[in-house]
Image 1: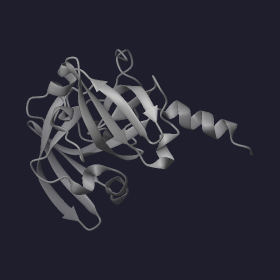
Image 2: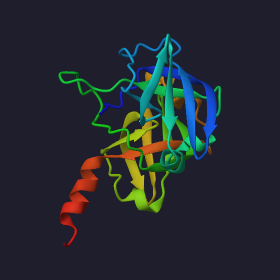
Image 3: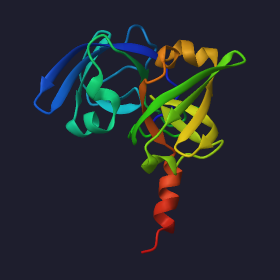
Amino acid sequence: MFSGIVKGVGRVVETTELGADRRWVIDTDGVALDPIVVGGSVAVNGVCLTATSVAGTRFTVDVSAETLRVTTFATLRAGARVNLESPLKLGDPLDGHLVQGHVDGVATVVALEPAGRSTALTFELPESLARYVVHKGSIAVDGVSLTVNAVNGNRFVVSVIPHTQAMTVIGKYSVGHTVNVEVDQVARYVERMLRPA
């Protein structure tokens, strides 16, 4: 479990094709993460991955075919910059919202506009996910906990402050960029409970 408060940006330094899967080596590039241990979890662009080896500032993860299918990871190559976050521990502050690291799908940046010192970003979601996004609700974009400022059909708008742009990969977004999205899980549970048996 994560909070969506990304600690900084690391870098994919090596990718290996393993049939339908991939293996990545990621360098933390000095990001202040909790110590990474073999078998431990790390959120990489919002996806919960398991460290399979650790050496200095680098750790290795295996990316399954299913993860490649539902995330932006199929297009990530060596050199790509990625958001990193350590898992929550009991007693940690919950500064963002509860993020599982189980990405629901991919959204696309369709507009970027100045909003004071912040940037208003508009994303387009698949129809199947749009019903889980609500005004003033929470959403994780590449693992970053954000508040939804507006919803219009299958599009939603968030405002990103300068600090978040500087500390995450969001500062490099442009129109057409694709992102990993995890909707608020409460909406999914409510839908399941209200569905006729």
